[in-house]
Length: 332
Image (cartoon, rainbow, N blue to C red; front, side):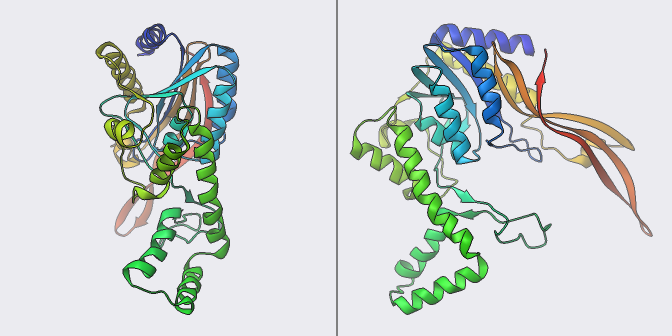
């Protein structure tokens, strides 16, 4: 698997006349990862080993994550090259889409999708998930808050300022005012970041405004998917369709990483333990890799064991003793 991946990377580098850097956040059910600030340091180490080169190709797969982390990663990569492109083999949603806006071009397969970049705010003051642990919080979507007021004003026809003020006060009883303030701040921030990044591939102000408006609000839902044709024809992004040879290499590399991360196999502690009383695990959940920098991975390791939680009737639970969770450089 490792040797096959290196060969695929080398062939893509030769075809694109660039240095390839893989950033693949896992979405295996139960072991999901996202773009986070801690990735920036590992990107920096990878790029130092690659060095300053004419062109870098980022092979990106993600459901999203921290918007400022995505912004920082794109700006960091651009310090090491004049030409920056992103290959999307399957999906680059949310912050992944924001990162794509900062590339000179986006290479999308026919399966590839982008998505809206409206952020969700998650902080300790967020509403708690009913029945969940104290740490389990409901993410507050920027568009959900806007939709709440659009419902009141346009669908229900409420225009009286006193009535709208009452609605706002009712909302603050469910969502902390500081969270609402953070939502308002996030709207302006994401638009500003998108505008600055887009100037790397779109120069017309009207087109930039159209793209940002659609990605931030007009798409209607954070789950909306944007395929290659819509990204190019409707939004006007600089999209490149891979030829047959490049497509086979992209698909081969995607399948290779997908197999290692076991993305298609949902993780269940019960199923993983099976009939055994205890069993160790060491899961790779995210991959950042290049030929020059090797493979960095976000890893969870520990041991599962069956424990009795009730004698009558006899019931078993599973104890998860996680002894490591973090980044690791993997020698292959």
